[in-house]
Image 1: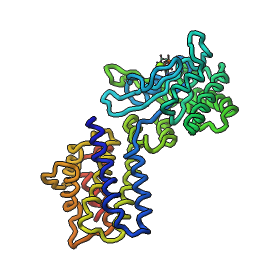
Image 2: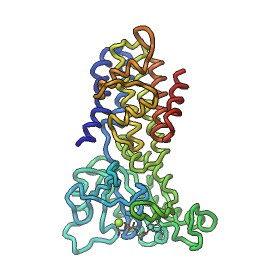
Image 3: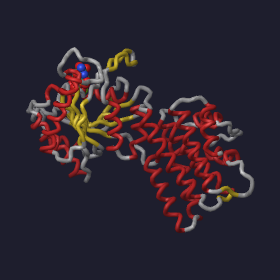
Image 4: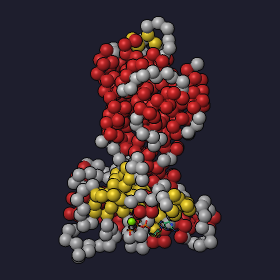
Length: 404
Ligand SMILES: Nc1nc2c(ncn2[C@@H]2O[C@H](COP(=O)(O)OP(=O)(O)OP(=O)(O)O)[C@@H](O)[C@H]2O)c(=O)[nH]1
Ligand SMILES: [Mg+2]
């Protein structure tokens, strides 16, 4: 797949080259620090995979609606990842542009007891659904108007699912309780967020109630979120938006997810705050690497490897913003900064020719401080350009003022 090849070329290879060519030459006492930072960037870039959730809740609880609200688009599950079982199977959700992917363990029949039409018991079904993968987190959805109806029975099943994950994968997924459809609570005339006053009080009461029930059985419950996920789409466009607390939920989920899923999460949610947060994380790590490598003067011959890390940082930030990983994306940005990138056509050549452009410094070597400063300046410029979608001259200005 083209996208995968580019992932290797732009995000993985520069780190690999640095490990192979530059790190072995560093003094032993510095190697550990730099390797540590490289590993942290590799977790984001090399181990990247889609986030996985178990979304559990009764029929009509609002599971599909929540997924749409997170994607800000009407997404349909396409295919199943593993063989469909009677109670649970993994579905892949993709945005229409197929730019972002999320995997969801759909637990049909949840809260409906053992249905005699099914051959498998709930436990067997989970065991087979969990044979290949596990959810990073479990979202437990309950309708606001039903928080006190038979929830205890559902919590028992929820615990079983969590234990099954623990048993099979030695991982105890965090559970987030989500009170859905809060707009349906009284008073009915108050239909538009932000829900305050009387409605706000009723929402708080419903959340507190679910919180108490859950804590009784799951003392380590991560958090309770009341949300409204209601949206209307026409021809793929959102024409009505009643979402409330979804951004807060998305933000909180980032912290529950492993870093290997962060880049996908940023693309799925298209939330600028999240994209910026992840871009800064990438930038800090890239700066630490380039600065660490250059704690003593960087020989000219090693400059392309430093530039390679900077380019992969820029590519990573562009990717997080929803852009493609390709040469066009990078050259567009470099052009905006006024870099003449000549005739280089492959990524590696690009780094080589850019190392002359990016550090127009006299002499035979540049310092690590300068390398780190330049990296951070490039990070700021890339955030402005790709995430904030500011014009080229503003990005250039941000870079210049950082290195002056
Ligand atoms: N007013 C309001 N309606 C909602 C909200 N979320 C979902 N709904 C409605 O509730 C109904 C059920 O929502 P779904 O998202 O289909 O529920 P589900 O859990 O996926 O249901 P199943 O797939 O059948 O198990 C739909 O008519 C939604 O439009 C909400 O926050 N507010
Ligand atoms: Mg559904």
